[in-house]
Image 1 (spheres, rainbow, N blue to C red):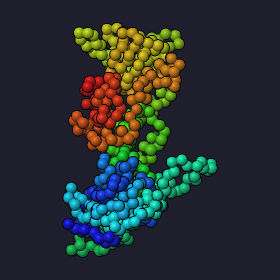
Image 2 (cartoon, rainbow, N blue to C red):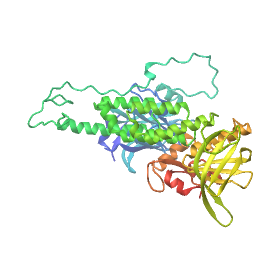
Image 3 (cartoon, rainbow, N blue to C red):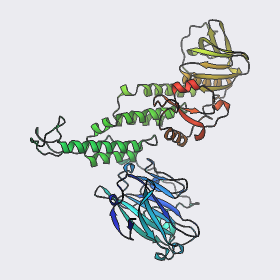
Image 4 (tube, rainbow, N blue to C red):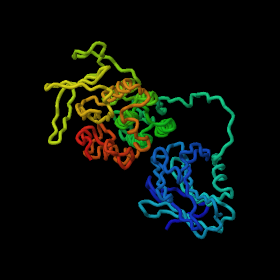
Length: 520
């Protein structure tokens, strides 16, 4: 079994060629120590505390570093690690015991369950140290190397953190004096990706390396020699991997955008070509941004700003975002309506004096009795005074004061009334706008502007839960595998007591969601 000695350094490729592997340690003590992984920048500093992975923070933003539920095994994916992270440290800390009480232990790197390299360590190396750096992985000339460290800190976790420029938060800090808000610097602004500098070329030279084309070094239609064409394709693939890693949590953050810029420079790519190469993934990210907002039924200004900023930066044309832009427009309209800005329309109905029409749409009412159920087609009109449903067999009016509950469904709304007539499901195409308008009109009638009558507030799905569901279902409908028109569905319907938790949520496409309805 390959082994590292204390202070020994070696190329990682000497032990494994895999980009994904695990780190773990077995350190026999009276009680097990806590294991952690630190991701440090080029200056050996913890400049981003999201890359301090331990039992209370189990993964980095792009899932390049992950800790399992036991708190003992770290999964490392080098292909996803941002270029700003230059070093990974596997460490152990103990609150109660020094590491001189440890018997023979070791840290190891494993691939597919098999140990590839081990660093053995003994308690005899230490005295009062309560924190130890076990192993280190670091970048060196575009390659990763590994080292056995065995360095201890008598001050424990605090001393370890301070050596990396970090601090341990005081549980009861003294109040700080008021400070002026930080000035927004140019570094904090999102900037379009810039292309890497290219070689100065002539008509018969490779535009990437600058060498002249010959009979043996032919140039392709893109004016690239064979070697540069191969390098370019490999660089594009690595850019795509980093882009997918940056989008893994359904967000694109500034540090991830800067990492993509560094990747373009490192791989010597043209920015426009690189973005075109990841166009399908970029469209998917923008569609997910809208889908996450649609789950709330509201569009906050920040989400809208993020969407249009990303669309511009990613150079995605409107023609590829027809569905997302339509949903965004509908969300914006629903948000304005829920805030009380209800539009006025012209209706074919003859309304009472002073009665104003606000919403009208074809609808199908599901009439359920003790012996059968049938669909009644008609037209639903919402006015300032009541709800009108008119069909070929007649119709009915519903006073807003009779509305007890409004449940938004994928294909309509379920109205629970204080009377039997008209209570039930109304199927429509624009369910979001219908629910929003009903919500606003009922609240205005009952003078409850701050208390929405729909269940949208209580149905809210936290962002971390949405991300869990998305990754669990791999961004596809759980029923048919489609990746288009996805929606979050309650397995046990919300109307039947189902909670908005990870175990009760799944991704369904709109077609499968409509087919399921409110059935278990």
